[in-house]
Image (cartoon, rainbow, N blue to C red; front, side, top):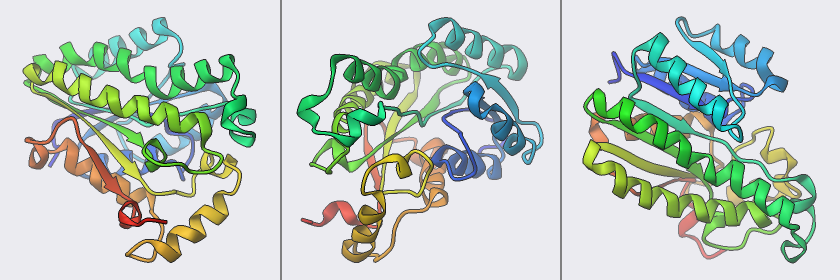
Length: 254
């Protein structure tokens, strides 16, 4: 499905990462991969990359415009262009998730929105001309249902996800003339390293397994398959959308 395509994936931290589930799905369909990493998880990401022949790894801090520019320039130089961009990046200071939303500090708010939402904007700006040269492309980002309804202790991250979803619509509008599609996947709770840092995450997982129509949680591999669909020609008519992969939990009242 993706033979000859080049995919750049932001957000792999370890083997449980949603970004890694997506990377595996894209590579399994024939895409050539490039993974970015933060220095603190560099060894882990390089070990994972080594399991998929031909994958390259690049250090990148998404809050540093110079590093973002260097990353995309290196993709073009080493891989000849870009067809797929995956943005699976989110962060909020721990104290902003443990307390009340009303007590969120200006600094914590700015950090959460900068990393979790704004970072998509310069990525698409840099990817757009590369994708346009190759006849189009696909951008996929990760969101969560807390953007639409209250999830206790998700706090400022929910606000960041709401901003991210609005960005998807505006970016899809502006990128459409270049045949570049921009979509988001709203996944149910996935047992990742980042998710385990959210207070009450285990309780949240148990609740989903009880309430969701499919009576189960969400696996990173399931999200990967949805991303594969969105990045393939089968989704050529879909852009600006939020696609749910949550065992149906989003249709329930509680």
